[in-house]
Structures are given as structure tokens and as C-alpha cells.
Image (cartoon, rainbow, N blue to C red; front, side):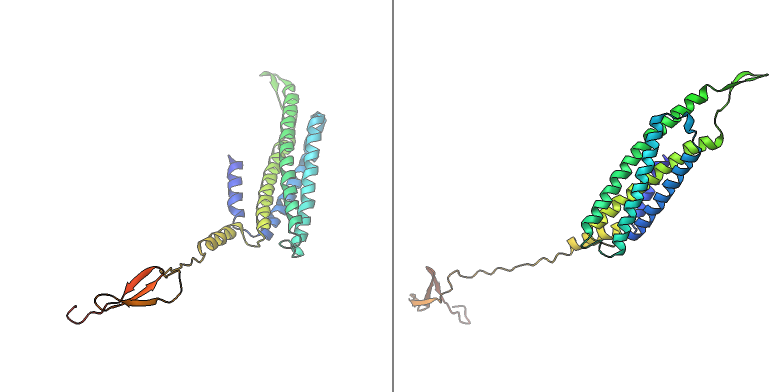
Length: 244
């Protein structure tokens, strides 16, 4: 539940930030995830962990380091001022690569977490001692520091990877839109532009399709002149003050 709340807060926060700020947050997430993974490497009891758990964990570390390198490359492109022009396609490729490696790292760290917890719990279940008053009792084989390294370091690294992937996702949207504003401002500007389209009303007057002048053809029985135009006849009438 806490992870979901953290993800929602991260999403809402990123919508109001500009790309440069998002890149800084992504860099911080990278540093945090690397720091917690180093803690795990240092204090997790790897002697009791299977080869699969070690492999998945170390591959995760490699993916996180690669995302840091790709992010630094993206930040260099932005500093050059070409991220929305000639280097736009390169920046989008870097963002997509970041997202792919974030997904891969998250899947691998979940698998390694399951294996590490299973191995530690399995070894810990066999560790008993005899108490004089209470008989055979179980005690933990591992210290609190080792359990903290296994639980806290991996969980914190997972959250940092998730936040990093959110940052990469927003960066991809903003780079694709070629904008330096926040995602929220970009969507508002886009909506305003669509609502402010100038609509022109063309007034159509009934005019004869034949632009030739009317031709006088004579008078009617009352002496009024008759004109002809496109096979239609028009008679002019005059009315005096008495309506005649």
C-alpha cells in the first residue's frame, strides 16, 4: 500500500515539474538505488544465497549502473541545447532505453528478492538452541543488520527504480513534444490552442450565377418595364402614396 501511495505522489509531482527538474530527480533516484544495492552487497549473507539469487541481484546492479550512464548522456544533450532540435531523436532513444532497463532491473530485483528471502528463511529455520527453562527454542541465525540489508536495501532500491522509470516516462513525453515546460503546462497549452481555433463564418448571398446584366425586353400590360436574366423575368413596379 505504501508503494502505491508513493507512486501516486511521484506521478502527481512530476506533472508539475520541468524536464531539467525531472532529470535531477531521476539522477537522485539512480544514486539512491545504487547506494542501497551497495549496502545489500556488503551485508546480505551471500554465503547462504544460491547462485541464482546472486546472479539476478548482480545483473540488477549492472542495469541500474547503465541507466545512470544513459541518464548522464541525456543530460549532456539537454545542456547542449539540441534536445528539442537536431538531437531530439537521440534523446528519445535514450529515454526508451532507460525505461527498458528500468523494467528489466525491477523484474530481476523482484526475482532476486524472492530467492534471497527464501534462502535466508530456509537456513534460519534450522537454527535452534536449547533453553534450560523452555526447552528447544529457535533463534535467528542472522543479525538485525543482515536482515535489514536484505529487507530494507532491496525494498528501497525497488522504490527508487520505480520512481526512476516514472521520470523516464515523463521525459519521453516532453522530449517527444519538444517542449521545455512541465507536462501539466504542456497539456493546458495544447487544450487552449485547440479551443482558440479561429472559426470564420462565410456569409453567402444569393447572387445570380450568370453575371451578365439584365436585358430589357419590354413592358407589361400596366406599362412597367420587364427585364430578363437567366430565363427569369423581373418586372419593376412603382407604388404611389395611395398604395396604387
